[in-house]
Image (tube, rainbow, N blue to C red):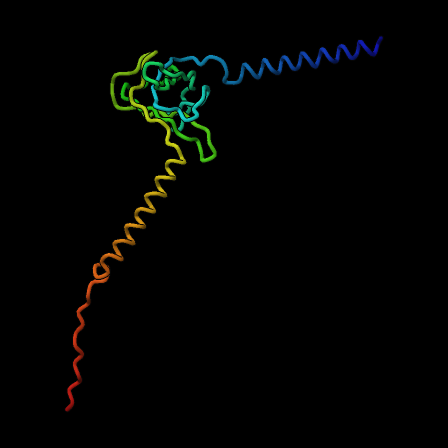
Length: 178
């Protein structure tokens, strides 16, 4: 009987410590609703951007992607962004989806413009740029390199005299004999 009481008390202490640890972690972590305002931007594709991804200005996190949905009338992806209250965006701000590294991971980058008018809560970022697909970029690069190589080969074989212009040679003078 005494042993069961000790085990019960120890179990209760472990559970209380676990609950306290979870409550502390939740209160200190950056989770839950972000204090601030929401703006949206329409993209032709989001390329793997997800809810919860970072929103960045000049490398500094200023918000998070809160929601992504398809607009049925335009078939564009609308991205909703929660921003900190102290960040005010000019209405000519540009939003672009970029890769964090070659290993993956995306973020929404914001490039503030120079306008004096600011985007209000619930407003829309008009200027957007969809993410570049790495495979497509590499394909274009390789294709353009092969084209320039082929063009260079054709130019050399088509006009050999153009690549090596004739050199005028002077006649050698014989030394004068006295």
